Image (spheres, one colour):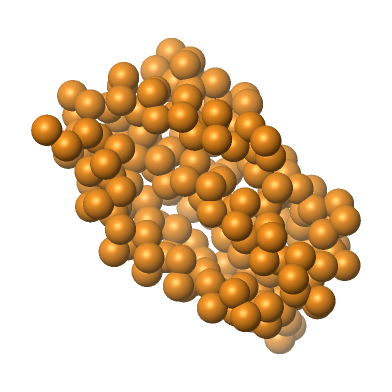
Length: 198
């Protein structure tokens, strides 16, 4: 029988790849990402992780083994945006507010997976001459640093323990989390354009 992590990889792959392409992957790889686009990415991640962390905090018993206090990204993102003199996004969302703890496992899978991709993006950002000067104090894309692999394995064990008996719900939630991530990207992009035109 296919394990939950493997099913998640397989069944969310189309949405995962779609999200990656939306999030300026080509510009990252070509070292053509602009400062505005870099800012847009930080704002998108801030809104997503703020909503997810807030939702997880409402279920402390279920997520005790997840060790949420060691996985906070909102603080890093707020600091990165402040370093760029960018106000925090004022986007009000109800993402994840009504999600069950089991469904939040799917969203956490998406959030923790972004930390793996972040290690690749961190290297790509350093190859971009427009972005590199902004990275001296940058924190989010450094992720968990040397602990990235260990944290991912620990999350995988937690996912198996809590989610295996509810695999279909976890997978459906992970798919929806990717859709929500894309929606946040579109909404923060609209706000950014509005701010520039004001």
